[in-house]
Length: 371
Image (cartoon, rainbow, N blue to C red; front, side, top):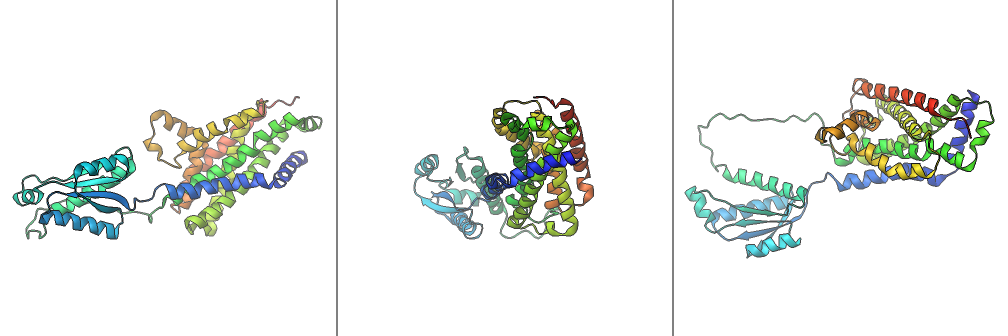
């Protein structure tokens, strides 16, 4: 046992003597959280909307007043008057406008005659998010215009839907925090997991291990525990800083702190044993560096940290269901976003624990205690 802890101590000393390595392992996921959390998930503001009023009637005035109200309240778009519909369409095509609304001639007369009045919305559908936002906004606007100003005293009974949200509004930075915590630990594992032994072999340092009576399991366990401790430190730092940045105060209750720390520990062990298993027979130190980008894409993005797993095709869902990232992200979401208890994370803890035990067993069997 002392021999195993000697390896752990050596690896941690190397880690603490390299401040740049610690900075990369802990700061990169935090930067990603800040940038992606503010770049995605926001609401469209101040989009440039061309308004072509070819009617100039009273009903067209109602539309312009509704647009002005949206501009003043939701700030979704800024109406810009245009005289020519062709020029407005050309400006949408050239990117000067984000969309255009065209009120055709005799629109007001058609409204009074109830003769299928129409307005046209021109959108740039190469930008799906912008176009869907404008379409939804004008769908709500036309629905409001279709409602009578004075409702009749006797109306038909209609079914209505009341949506009950269990949690307050979740900003995208909060939604992204569980994935950023998992990514911080994975980056730390990639830098300090099985790759450390590959570097030691490249430098000839591993010969010092092999001339000692240390067993294969002690050597593998020592390297994995050292890598997991580094990942735990990265996970704790990102969890605290990320929770403060995202405004998640529920994490700082004693019970939640225990559950979150337990998730961090189990996730670190699972990630580290997974990386060690992948690199256990690798000799060339360039191989793990070449695979980092592929592993990051293959494991992080299918985990549900950025987009729901239910929206994936079947083959990608298959990857997600065996990906340790998936269970880590699910557990952190349950604790950080839903303030759930142990029941919500016990399946995630079980999967990650079993996966870590299986992978370290296989890695020990495959490990070659030779030069």
